[in-house]
Amino acid sequence: MLKLLLARLFSTCIVVLGVVVMVFFLIHFVPGDPVDIMLGDNALPADREALREALGLNLPLASQLLSYFSNLLQGDLGMSIHNRIPVLDLLVDRLPATIELALASLLISIMIAFPLGIVAALKKGEAVDKMAMGLSMLGVSIPNFLLGPVLILVFSIGAGWFPVSGRDGFGSLVLPAITLGTALAAVLSRMIRSTLLEVLHEDYIRTARAKGCSWLQVVTHHALRNAMLPIITLLGLQLGVLLGGAVITETVFAWPGIGKLTIDAINTRDYPVLQACVLLISLTYVVVNMVTDLVYGWIDPRIRLGGTL
Image 1 (cartoon, one colour):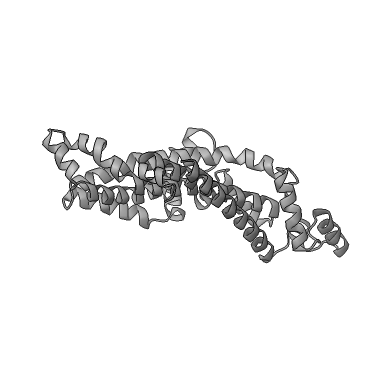
Image 2: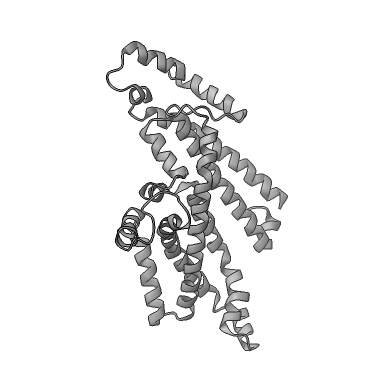
């Protein structure tokens, strides 16, 4: 297990380093100057140059990259160009909202996907199976930028049950969590069905049934545990997406999380904030996937003993 952990830590560092360098150059090549956005079109050339020098944007890209890495190693993510407050403070302020939305969405997806996938596997080819897979296909097909506004029109503007946008209590969490959770549940239910169908015909399943175990006991105590590896893979990837900030959903519902902060940083060409957001998202991905690999080793001793995947 230690060998596996060290290998994952090394690959994590390489991935994060590559992401930081690539994002740094990409955002500087995007058309648009933060100085022009901050001062407007009528600013004097002298004022533009003074602000560019004050922000360090007049330096060569290589010098800016070295300065960024130097500050990063000291835990300094820089100062927001647009708000003139520390980037770390912005991330700390927005991260709880993203974590709250991610966990709520994951909970909703699990509550929907597991019963749906298990019933579809046990009733393969029957009407229940076809209905469950039809619902999952519908959930995959509807994009978040369409489902979100539809939910707002029906349940916020029409019924008046939930707030339209923002983060103000439990009611504000329901619609964005459903928007994200249903899409994940659709994919997850199909994965659960397919993996269960692969193990339900194994010898140990027939042995358990011959001993008098009910189908519920067989599925929960035998089949699901052996079918969990691909399910955990999908959950790990999707949790990385959710914790990284579901950009579209947070934008539609004006949810003050990392995804909304990323869009705001792109619109204002706020390089330090955008770099920090992408760094946080990439770290979330690789850390969640590293934890997923370690869970693999806990579930399957062959992976733990081999030290590789």
